[in-house]
Image 1 (cartoon, helix red, strand yellow):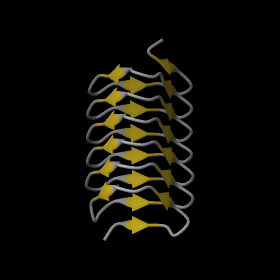
Image 2 (cartoon, rainbow, N blue to C red):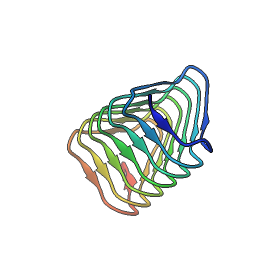
Image 3 (cartoon, rainbow, N blue to C red):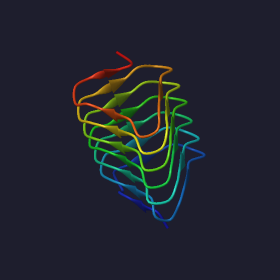
Length: 120
């Protein structure tokens, strides 16, 4: 069974693997899917209809908008904002305090530097 902190608020229709970890005070919208070994760190907010691929981490106070897809082994550091309808391909690193704008596609292997906005 997934490791979900009792303070987390999880919407309806959410599917997660046994190895998913959801930390304190996380909010997850409806109809999300979390792959194997996904970690959602403290105080993050995940919108509705979000898919997070295997081995991905969303850092503390992260925010992922509705209808977004994160590939495998994506690392989102703390206080990152990902807009709605965003596609983040496999192996992407988004450093702290960065922003990904609505509708963007972040190519595989990209690194978005701290405090930057993508696309610029």
